[in-house]
Length: 392
Image (cartoon, rainbow, N blue to C red):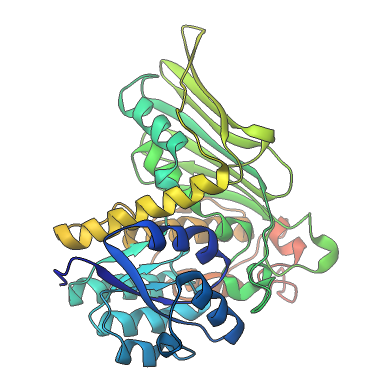
């Protein structure tokens, strides 16, 4: 484990998320420095070189060469999730701490394999669950933990206004809409899943969902653009309403002694604008909760990445788990895949999924091996490769 003053980072993948997230963190924090990068696309390598001021000799088209040639403490992996397994395993085998973009990977079997490999090697393995550091969610969490509205009963995460941002055009701008991404809007904004369990202070034990693709129906979509989830907890319930489009954004929490509401400017969804208001109601009396010195939404995203990176580096130095662990990424993936399974079968899915289940082993590709509910909106949408599946 490194004890040097400045932790050295190698970046694998230089897509858009690096520009607005990782780049601000890695160019402002004093105790971490990006010293090399790898990307299969020459244009993205050149873009990253300009961003970070790197010399030609630390630019690589093959990440293996970077791992062999450069002395690194941390490897940050931002390639699309279908390519991550071997990269993560190779970085871990090389003794590097790993920070990976969300979702962690495509299948639960692979995700657990990666976590186990990191634990056996004794390296830190974190995931970019940066919404933990958004001030509006931290304020809601503080109110809930203080008992401000009593025990939470129903939490609703409104994410129906997710902006359909394209990927880097130099690689493949629509990769999030491909089955190989492991899912659609729910995987794209899996932030709502881990935040739900964090705010409720427990793990869900049941999932029920409708999963559909009405917005892009004319494009013969491969993945969903709408996912409506209901989660049951040992005490309490939650709903996640997720969709690309111009729908409702914000958070509602009903408790035994009141409720909390949070909404965004321009009526948008979390991550795409600043919170306009947070207020609680007790005894039918409103109390406003202000957030001071709010930056613009892009500055807020950059700040959340910076705080996540700072915590991850501190976790390495302090020999502790980071706030956003890869194991939490496994959990979020399990909930999302269970929602897809529920949408296909029309049944409530109990957690955890059995290791022998095809969805556990193969992710969304395993949906072709389960019994399809004849009235499934997911099947009717023809997503997840179900167009040719016999409904009987």
